[in-house]
Image (cartoon, rainbow, N blue to C red; front, side):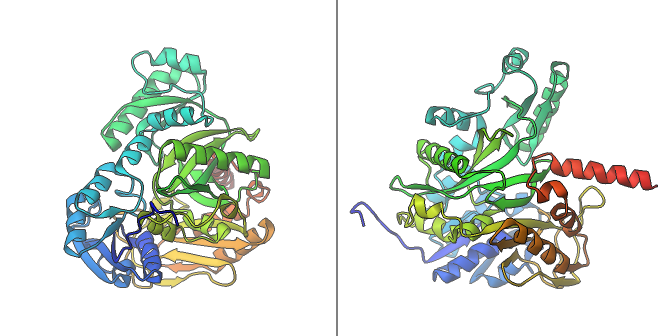
Length: 463
């Protein structure tokens, strides 16, 4: 081991999150012999992550603004419990530079990249500039925030274009503009949504790639300049920019393209002087050319897909990097593909009625099981799903040696999965795995919308 390596093992870690992801982190902490501290709102007293942690602290009322987004309350909970470090999970404050800085200022380790890296990569226009300097392909765009001359900028790029909020996320503040006569209205709409959701109405433009795939590359980087990239995830199956199904490796990406994706992701991460686990997201055109979109400076919801394919515990990797340990795998080892994997996000939503959230009490909970099946969930019979937070109930992760068996196993698991008491998206996932385009691997970011439109047309014709 190099002489400049300084390892500071953690004794206790606070998880600044809730539900499924908090439980996921607690499990790895237990395996590593590290004590865990859960935080919870008044609405989450009965959540499984509270039961499973070594300690638990109530940090506020049910609304996120008074609990899971309350930086002072979380940092105070970490200090009074004697935590060495804070794991942010995903969502909430996981990509908040102020939170990362507050944790460090309080004398603890933030398990993730530095506040500076989060700030740089969190502003999408700045992230594009880093990508350009690193030689990573980007979609033609405004190369920065657009001002009053936005008509001239849009014409130079060429329609169709995508208007994107500078501080956006989750599809908020994004609008496609197919022709110039719609530009004023789309600008006003995108800016208004950006202002309402992020307190900042600045936007930038990108060339709109028609029928693209959403391909992302999981990366890990230590403090000593070592960076590895894993096999890609295909996240094209999404509704309103929200992912429903993720798959690895992509049925569309060949060996040569995979190597190019991994090389581009590593170049970008090195250029940003990034430390920790993260994801580099790309749009891929039908000719397999790809363009940088953004970096997620945290653990992804869909990280179990990569864990299955590469055989690594990404949370453990996060913790070891944060402790100061160098990566213990090479790029060659990281690139190994052990199987094929797919993740179905099971949400408490009524997919028959525009995916309306459907919180309530779980009366019966019989998750799928068997060979090649993993369930990440904090559900149990009698648990009441709060109405204040994300509707994610469970992640069904299925693995198999090839894609034919992968889809057959997914169908079996979705048929086997029983939930009573609330509506779920399981019926819609059944439609996905039986859709001919999906079976053939012909998916793009618009496939789910086309499926829904076809269902609507069929329903209307049957009336």
